[in-house]
Length: 316
Image (cartoon, rainbow, N blue to C red; front, side, top):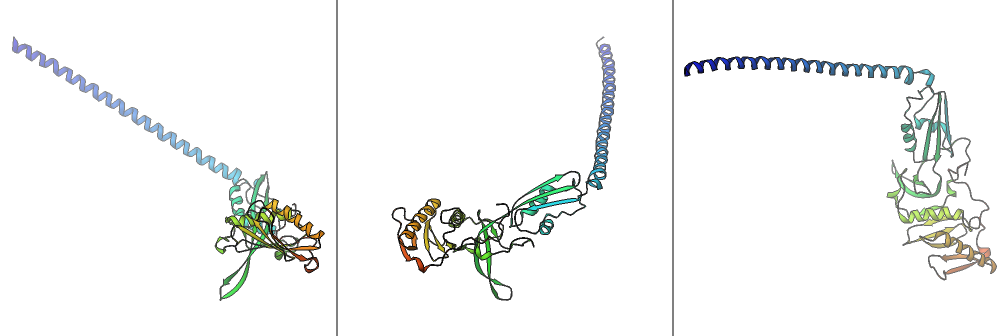
């Protein structure tokens, strides 16, 4: 009896094993079909999206970027300075017939602002066929003169111009209808380190910055028109030495520039009353500024009007 029960149990066990194997194969087949279907759908979706993207790209090129309806017909370039318009057009890399919508405005702006002569640029599309470019040029207020060796062993005097922010300008093309340039009319900054004079970059030396502020403040000060500002020496220790066209030497501290210019006017007016002109004046001393006088007839008169700077703006 015991042997018969064992045999019977073995027959039952074999049936269950076959049943489990059959179900496992069915599950695997179902999973394989599901995975194949999912992969097919994914590939079809990717392929469809790619075709849509290519079709959209083609349509965009044909109907927008290559459409003659958006070709530039009017190129309006304006500047507040003296750079020739054709020069600005070359720097911008834009010409009539270029597609207005395909144009990279940031590229045009950056290309123009690479020039040391230009302070800022605004570029605007005016649909369907116009492009406006507005240029703000750097206005030099002072110059630096240096002797430099040129190819062939020639030594030349090179002039650099600086605007109020200290940015260096070296060459300055001029439009035919612009006023005649007069570079020598700008005050000369003496004692500037030649290493710092890189066109397009700002000179960051504190004394140079103070000297430029002094030049800018002088034009708006009570002394403007009374004397001619010829040069500012920045080689001194914590002071600026100003020279006028009348031979007056004035020493300035690096700060309180407007206050010192007002005090200079007071001393100048006092000299007029006593029939004297200032020979030297030290305004870096806060109290009782030392002054040496000169007979009034010994100095040349000031020019009535200052000559325009080489890049004087039209709408200032």
